[in-house]
Length: 107
Image (cartoon, rainbow, N blue to C red):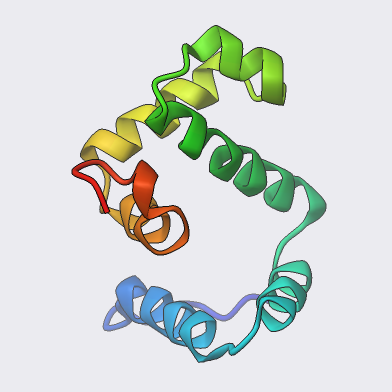
């Protein structure tokens, strides 16, 4: 049974706690196991699809070609593109660490 949230609870605290858990993990295998435990198969498919299109968008590949390559919907590709441009900066931070040559503004 779901607990009733108190009026003083800040949902940002929960996001911070989840972020802390991810940062604490030391290996790809640990992160993978955590995500497999945390997410449903549909959630994982949605997240991996979004992540798969990020480098393609940063390379300037057209949406329809990205869709053809990845089978991710054009609508989702557009949402990811808007998030790259106007989001919290998470995609940029990850790309900066993984593929710095793709990061807008260079390495």
